[in-house]
Amino acid sequence: MTRWLGLSAVVIALDQISKFWMLAHFHLMESLVVTPFFNLFLVFNPGASFSFLAEAGGWQKWFFISLALGVSLWLLTLLRQHAQERLLPVALSLILGGAVGNVIDRLRLDVVVDFLDFHFAGYHFPAFNVADSAISIGVALMLIHQFFCSAKPHD
Image (cartoon, rainbow, N blue to C red; front, side):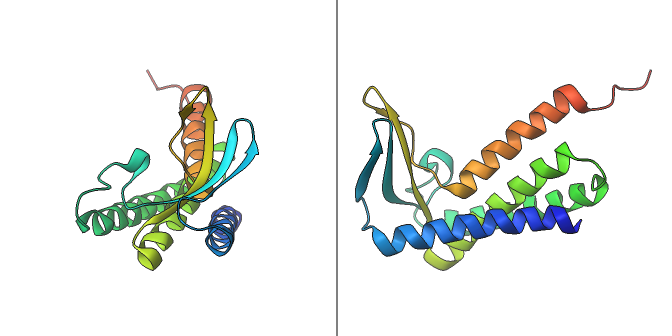
């Protein structure tokens, strides 16, 4: 379990360090063009993915914190059960680290700090952060595990 919790801790550290750096060097809504398709763009998200419930009036903070903590406990249970495997624990650890990284923001700032802004032909994907990236990669790895690595059901 130690290596999987260590991976989660690395995700949390990278997430928080990147957010501290953005908060120290950018003002809200400030943007820096990095490439023709990528900007650093500081925004705050009081909601969830794609600003879901962002305008809900404040109760959503505690809802998302509770949800993330509940999911984190479930992920820890799954990590214990699958600690000897490779792919699934990596996926679970990435999701756990991302969830905790965003919970830290909600507890500390009441919002999640987002700053990675990818765009193409005038369309901007919603801004996200390192924690969101880890969650997305973790979910993709879980799907790969489910479809390609899981044991076949018994007859």
